[in-house]
Amino acid sequence: MLCRKLSSLALLLLASTVALADIRIGVIASSTGPTAVVGIPQKNTVALLPTEIGGQKVEYIVLDDASDPTNAVTGVKKLISEHKIDALIGPTTTPAALAMLDFVAESRVPLVTTVGSSAIILPLDDKRRWVFKTTQNDDLIAGALIEHMLAAGTKTVGFIGFNDPYGENWFKVFTAMAEKSGLKMVASERFNRTDQSVTGQALKVMTSKPDAVLIAATGGPAVLPQTTLQEKGYKGRIYQTHGVATNDFIRIGGKAVEGTLMAGGPMLVAADLAGNNPIKAVAQGYVKAYEGKYGAGTMSTFGANTYDAGLLLQKAIPAALKKAKPGSVEFREALRDALEQSKEVVGAQGIFNMSAQNHNGMDARARVMMAVKDGKWVLLKD
Image 1: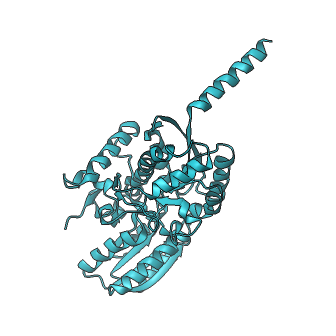
Image 2: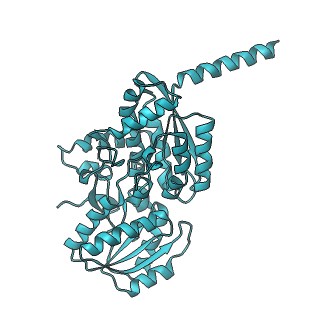
Image 3: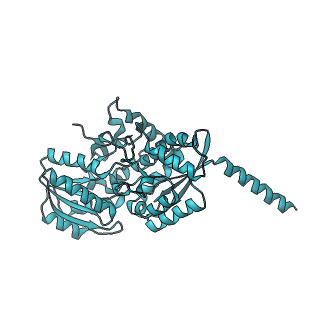
């Protein structure tokens, strides 16, 4: 009899807990595996997101895909079928995001993704209409890199990128823009995220004697080509994409990444931004909250992308609540529509203006040129 009463009490407590979580948001992040440097701050940032929006309780269910697209798909299925999520944030990598497109669209769950490649939202077809993106599109970042290269007198560029959708999309986007601007691509090499050596690729690029080398990779693996180029005596300028916009890149690379040039979101150098820049207050607020919880120097733009996803949802959810109740297809559809109508939403990484044709909504205000100087990222001013 006592056991029955205890079981009944447990069920009542569980039911009351579930009832409080009116809105459920799933989060998939690579908190382990090769891309953990990117995924850990994304996972950590969830603790800073609002637990109440529009008078409704919000529950976040966080899963680790271990940097594996197959695990990401398994996680999405679980979040949709078991947890009945209303929205999804993540994942960490472009391959994982592309792998889950079918399931997100079929279940009509809005995905606010934090990956770098624009391939996840372009072309904006029936699947991608359910996806929004809080990381700058590759062409926005590439434009800033090309401007800097030209100003520095660069004529020829070598390329080393991931052998996956992130690297391929970057090569496609950058090459077209670079050649149109008068830059000549003289070498192109690929490597895998788990490779332990890229000596062959580095030597092939160096043989072409480029004025500069662009590395299109993310997290810790992006350090390997740069350190290898340095060890083999390359003296030209080395550029990285916003896939390394984190202090961990400097911690892992040490002196070998000193002088690295990168275009990325303004959050990483928030203290250097002009006082009248509306992004500055939001970015510094995020940095203060994150480092207050996890320690000085721990923030990264990857976490800020998750934070901005939370801000977009925080703005969109009240509008969706006027049309339907959480847990329903109607609510998810209304939430998708509200996200698409986001206007002048100021985040830690940029200002978002979404539309039916643009599910990223970031402009030149979402990028700055920076460099590693004396072991930290510093803003490069005009």
